[in-house]
Length: 115
Image (cartoon, rainbow, N blue to C red; front, side, top):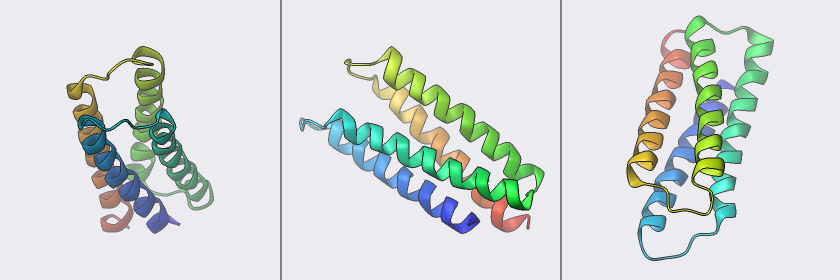
């Protein structure tokens, strides 16, 4: 289960990088594709909490899960409320991607190296 969550978050990260590349070109990307990116992250987080509820996990895993929760809620607020129907600034998207990569790395560390 823990390996599945890391794979989901890695897939979401690569999908986000692809979305960034395509959206910065002149091609039109459907808003539903971006929502699917967020939904996939939420599914990964749900599986992580399901696994944590059964196994307990260590402090690192709980910390990553809580920070991921705040991160997903903030991303939803920023992308769906603040920049809805507007062009999202590149800096906001890059910061979103960097935080996601750091959190995925911390989750990978906490799941595999501390257990």
